[in-house]
Image (cartoon, rainbow, N blue to C red; front, side):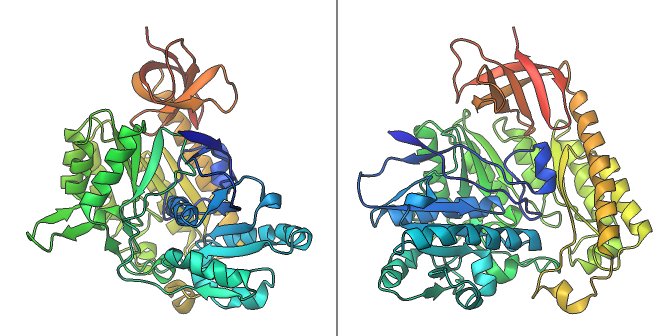
Amino acid sequence: MRRKLTTPIMYDNNPTLDGIKQIDESRQGTALYKEQWADSFAPGGKQFYIESYGCQMNFSDSEIVASILAEVGYTPTRNAEQSDLILINTCSIREKAEETVRKRLRAFESIKQERPGTMVGVLGCMAERLKKKWLEEEKLVDLVVGPDAYRDLPKLIGAAEDGQRMINVLLSREETYSDINPVRLESNGITAFISIMRGCDNMCSFCVVPFTRGRERSRDPFSILAEATNLFENGYREVTLLGQNVDSYKWDNPETGQHVDFADLLEMVAQINPLLRVRFSTSHPKDMTDKVLQNMARYDNICKYIHLPVQSGNSRVLELMNRTYDRPWYENRIEAIRQILPDAAVSSDIIAGFCSETEEEHQDTLSIIEWANFSMSYMFYYSERPGTLAAKRYADDVPLEVKKRRLNEIIRLQTAISLRHNQADIGKTFEVLIEGDSRKSDQDFCGRNSQNKMIVFPKKEGLKPGDYTMVTVKDATSATLLGDIAS
């Protein structure tokens, strides 16, 4: 049995991991909502309220936190005013994300005043980055817990209830939470995330993730398969395999010596059942292999969609970003996708105004967006993050007004390409997994095709969320396809 839960889920789009779905507001990092479902909890006990920001990994982590709290009697609530514990799962990828979190904390001050026993905790990457500063700068914060310390939450909460202000931000080389069955807070009952690895070994000069989430470590494939199988048996029809860089997934069986790479794992999950769709996020161009593409082509239920961040179209800027590939390498990967998966859609992440970027180099970024024909992109101007290699090595010397102007040029171009991309689908018929009602009308369903494009279409008697149906596209915007059920 499941009951509907509508705890707020806040998006502040992340250039490391793509968002769940494209909508126009995502280009501005606007907060969104998503319906959630959670397993039923026993009545009574204490309540917790959680908000998550940033990448899909943070939302997956919030599901792990919910599972850990459930074991000690905490029930989720959508009402912060009635909660005993308020948690904010934070993101440090951009300055705006951190500013948003601090504003939200201000909003909780009145709750603590009205309910003196209410505790406030900061989780996630921002907790790891700022550590003890949280307790010094934010007097209402009772708990500061990093991404690898969630198992300690019951103990930390107990100490905080006794009046102590607690912190645990130690990073781990082993923690994967593979034995925890997440409470599906942010799922619609049809789609779900599965975290397959944690951390990142890439040292992109603009990124704080290696410092906030630690080194890469992969879950054993058997626990991943068990989680995906359980989801399918409970009515889920799509899973997204998550990692900062899924293509670097690797696991060696200590007993047999068997080596499992990401292509192998992708195939193993696809073989669970043909009715279980498989997606993944995010890929790194340096690690995207033809073996992955060939396995995607081999299985119809592996979605033909790849999020492949380019960040910049200029090789000198890519070198400054420490992306470990140049423009020709990225173009080679796009050409491989086109050859092996001609029907695939590719999306990307793009940063405008990185350190010392010239106008000519900005034009290179515009040209690769046009050449790659991205179905959509997450676009940002560069925001210097303390502690990163870029902050230590390079001057943030592109004026803010130039960054914003370049970003607006990128957005305008990508919007036009997305519209053109979607208009090319008019007249085509796609298999769509129904996810639920359209946001704008309960007379329409919405769902995505294999290429990760959202399609809205009128309801038909006998169909329900979780069903597959064929939809013919009749019209399109830059963000959404509009269609009718194929006759």
